[in-house]
Length: 64
Figure 1: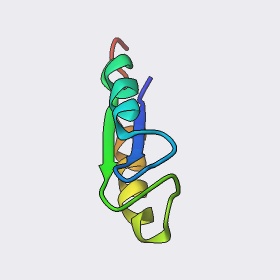
Figure 2 (figure 1 turned 180 degrees about the horizontal axis):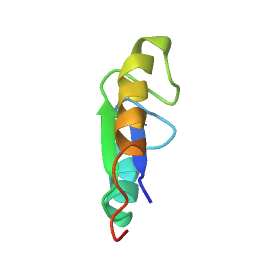
Figure 3 (figure 1 turned 90 degrees about the vertical axis):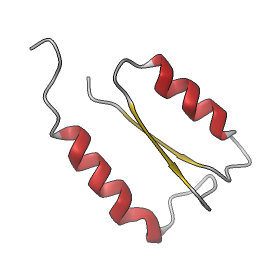
Figure 4 (figure 1 turned 60 degrees about the vertical axis):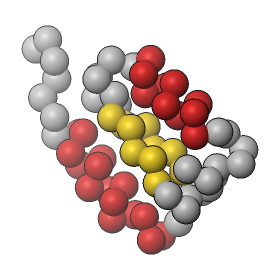
């Protein structure tokens, strides 16, 4: 299943390393680390996140 992990580099609630571990644990997951972002999704990153969602959602499923 296409998977996108989005994580703020400056997240003080959940360390960015946890996002990396999740991405490593899910086969073929894509990880986006966003500098200056904490445990939120500020409007300034919406275009970057939306582009990544569209890319991952449009990727062919492996094994099909």
